[in-house]
Image (cartoon, rainbow, N blue to C red; front, side, top):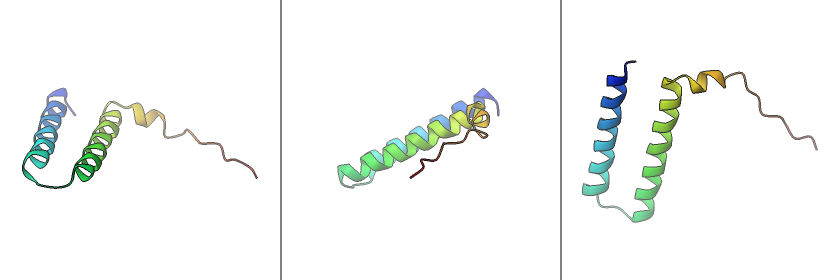
Length: 66
């Protein structure tokens, strides 16, 4: 994926998020939840696009023993 495509996707997602926040009436806590979910998804997508998450595939979280 080219950097141009990444910028276009970020612009579209940002515009859609702005439209949702601006024109869809809903309670502020719901807007906050939607914003956090979208931003988290975009950050994870960017990490995947730039290959950071690909390096973490083999990482394991140690289990706690009782």
